[in-house]
Length: 230
Image 1: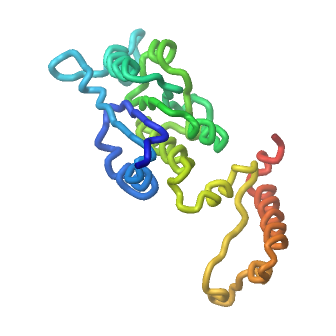
Image 2: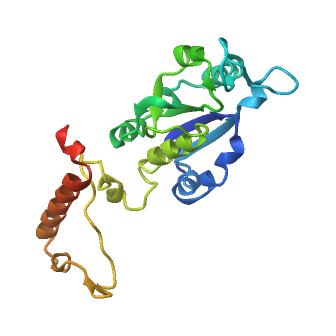
Image 3: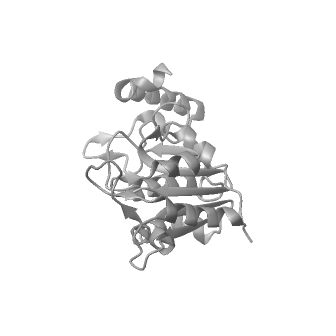
């Protein structure tokens, strides 16, 4: 019987957003194989007032509402009483941009908490006192951190050994070696007079790999030259 390699606790004001994504595709497979345990925690369950309010107006005025300290601390501290967490991650547009190397690192963790913001943001004291890492999925602003949390979970889970049937597939993904993937083809050989490169039918593994390396470099130079400057 498999033992979960990673536990991911997600703290959110909108737990229903996760149900379909986390019960589909690769994440569903990982859960079925018991390689990952994912728990969703509703922030509203930790609010003190009868209306379960988790947000309030910002000090100093301004538009929008801010998630309060109390429910977030209550939820995360309860989780921390039960186990040690390697990282408590806040999904935020001004965080460190998510890369494949970060995903590789996080996939080696045992326990992770992901906090999703919403509304205008969260009280800064949560970030100062609880959060160990802040991650962004890009230079743009979404309505909340739920979609970024789903993306982060997916990029982590697919790297867990045993999740993907062909483990080599994940190792050949774009960015794993600092470059983009080469083009891939499958049957038929000739589709609307557009043929598969002959080298791929040669059976010469060394020559095929050389061709793929060359195509990967060409593609990276054209689309993401910044990757070659690191």
